[in-house]
Length: 255
Image (cartoon, rainbow, N blue to C red; front, side):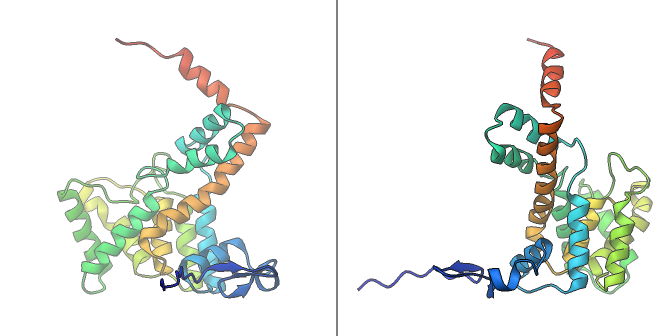
């Protein structure tokens, strides 16, 4: 007799009369009682976050939701222009652009900080940061989370997220190291760069104990809301066709 197939899950299930999620009755225990940010944290971490964790986590989501006409937003709008019958295609097009230059910095920075901390000793964060920046420069790489194409002096999100983390008691080693990098990198790079918001989001999420290899997913979760807003605005005040025609009419063929 063949062994019975089993596909275990601790997330959700349903029967004819009820839906269970995370061991709770979805309709009776969660709907109207748990916010979406809290639920997203709970789904990934496998534990219900505290109010302070929810506040910091949702601040991160808000910080990453939308940044105007970024490549991801333009991709979503142009895809919607091409296929207005495929809202999911437009959203997916925008999300697929989340990489090392846009959105992906959140995970890149969190992973970088975690790797540095894993090999560091002591609690002199300035010394640890200085050595990390020197090593990174010697390897011909950039320090994730340093610099911003628009905010040349200070990213306005950075001090707010750090303050919220401190207020809620989640100002941990990743944020401490990230701030230390902000203090010492000029000695190595010979120029002053701001700590960008995507980087501080990665540091904050890592200090919340979330897996660093999933941090890009939280950035995409936040940006999905922003992209939906971009598509909604495209419906109200379309600009995608203008973008397309501007590029097309100024294209220069060079054989």
